[in-house]
Each structure stands twice: as C-alpha cells, then as structure tokens.
Image: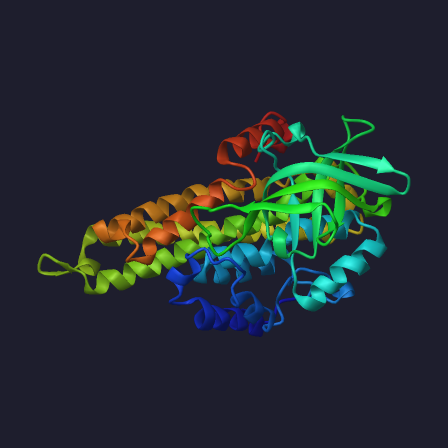
Length: 386
C-alpha cells in the first residue's frame, strides 16, 4: 500500500529535478538523463513489482496517483519510468518462477528497465501481421525479425518480443531475450515530436538465441493484449498530469496578462474556459482511478492469469485511454489559445505540453483502433454494454 510519504517523495522529486527544465528535457538528449538515477533514490522505481520479488508491490490505482505527479513534471520522464509495467506484468503472470527470480527481482533491486517489442513496419495496429519468427532449435528458441517502435530498449535489462511460430504461423509466442544477447541491433532512435525525454527505438533481431524456457505461457499476441491494460491506463494518466500543468500555467499567466482595464484572470470568458477545464480534469481523474481499481481487482484474484487470458482487454482501460487522450487534447488546445501567439512558440512550455499530450491518442492503439475494439467487444455483445 502506498504511504503518504511516497506521494510526497514524488512531488519533491518533480520539484527538484523536473520543474523549470522543460527546454532541457525537450532537447532530445542522446543518453538517458540523470533524472532517472535520481528517481531511483526515492525507492519507488518499478513501484508495481511484487514484494515477493523485492519490489514495493503498489497497486495500479497507486500508480495512477504517482504517474499523475510525474507527468505534471514531464510526460516523457513519466513514460520512461512506468512503461516497463507492460513487460513485467506479462512475466509476472505468465513467466516461470525461474524467469521471475532471474529477471524481475534484479529490476526491483536496481530500479532498471525492460522493453516490449511488438509493432513492425507492416504490423502497427494490425499485430496479427507480424513477420518476426520464433523457431525451435533443440532446447533453444531462435528469434529473427525487425521491430519498429520500442521504448527503453537500448538500456533495458531484457526485451519481451512477440513473434510468429516458425512451426505453425497461426500461433504466436512471447519470448524474453536478455539485452546483451548476440543479434540485437539498435537501428535508430526515433526523433519523436513529443515526450522527447523518452527513448523509442527501431530494433533488428537477427538469430537471437535463448533457452526455450524463456518463452512465456500462452499466445504471444494474447499476452501482449493483456499487458497493454496496465500501460494504457498509465499512458492515459499522463494526460491528467499534463492537463493539470496546463491549467496552472494558464492561471499564472492570467494573473499578470493585461486585458482591457484589468487582467485576463478577471475575464468571464477565461473563467468559463478554466471552469470547464477543471471539470474535465476531475472526470479524467475519477475514471483513471476506477480503471486502476478494475485492474487491481483482477490481479488480486488467485487465478488472475486465467482470468486475464479469458478477458483479454479491460474495458475501463480502453475507455480511459480514449477519453483522456481526447479530453487532454481539448484542454491543450484551449490552453495554448490562452497564450495567443506566445502559445505557438518555443518560448513558452505550453507548446511542449501540446506535443506531449498528442502521444496519448497515438501510442498503444490510436483512437480509431480502440473505438473499433470497444465496439466489437463491448457494444455488439449486449451483456457487456455499460
């Protein structure tokens, strides 16, 4: 359970290491910033890893609170710090005890990272079209393929790679590959528009050999779908942190911005827009906390792995990502307009916040992809409608 001191520690980290550094964090540094080492010092790195493996064992609902604060400081830093949950949740649920002890326990101890490699050039939203191949060679697996977008890969401890079975192309596998395995090549780091303090790569895998025991149990694509539940909720949460920052910047600006015989703060149009913004922020937070509780309820079950395998997606995770991405973009648009021409320059952080906000509706399934998923799984089946 999260303690009040934990939230205070994250707020102190944001104030000391992120506030006022928006230009630096937006500068696309070659190597991970020292802020990640500073975050390890809080004792909260990989806060979701179970206590049985040396982690803090905090819930996803707790994670919403933490990511909200981190994203208030910088969305890219927040993204880098939480995105490992996508891979670790799959190992926790479907990996052997040996894999958990060998790979998750060191992550808990060191506060290090893992990466998940799913998308390919011809398989973005349609992951069923992946060409990466997982072949069995005696007691080993050989993985070969080209992966398009993966975050934290270059400095990860290990990679979770989804590929198609060489023996049966209709079947998919999720394989854990240590980062130092021969055959892994970083093709390039993507020059992304927003969340520029994060690190997303194109990766080539050529004949990467690992023990057959490094394959997780179950269909690789199904496992990826399950893992995305936690990361989608936390990606949506970054919209909340960014929105809060935009609101506060607008309020600070309005106190001194001259308008007619007073200041912008006294203008009724401004007041109406900020009132609307606060309503949106409040609803975003309520939905995110509920999505976190929904996720935690499944994870608390003794047969969580089976429940997830039957369920796949979590409805509130999908709707949280869609709603927060769309609402956050609305808030960013209104916020930038408050600053007039200044809002369209690099002189104000509002431009960076707009670019950061845009990623929420793009990564891990664009809105049209998620709309289709919600329709097919939660509208067509009448009992699953809200």
